[in-house]
Image (cartoon, each protein chain N blue to C red):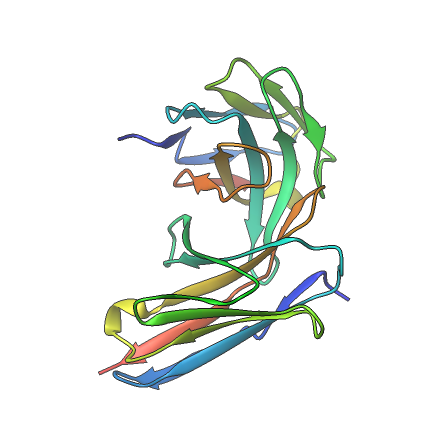
Length: 112
Length: 108
């Protein structure tokens, strides 16, 4: 079972470039999430989609946008990358909102 | 004050030891609690949910203390494979917050 699939796994960007991180799940989950993880900070929620057709801001949404393309796919876009956005990004999904989540294996993003 | 706080460790223990981690949370309206495990450079994986009455899964026991607003994880008979970072997760109706994690290293 694929579970939650994220692409790409690694990316290096220059300051000001744009990029979209892709996430897809095959578990028929209703809710999807984007997190970033920085050393000593734990996972912080960027945006989430409680159900298809809805998206909401999390704890650290500034500098990001999301699209819930359909039930399976939830993308994260950086319109103008900044060095402060260097992080590991995780996508996750759960059957319903706030239930235990299944995570993708992450995207390691460096902004120079 | 962070919403969810954990001792970052590291906890270094010998194989076979018993080790316990605590996690405190600030939001008294929190309703759901979980422990996740994260291996180095990997994604977090659900270890166990934490129920009000406490629950056990093999060598792992989770407890909730609502009055003092903390949850705990006890690992008995530690194995080398238990080496990982353990993340405490606290949820209310609005969002889910992760602790920064406690790092455990089990040594031969």
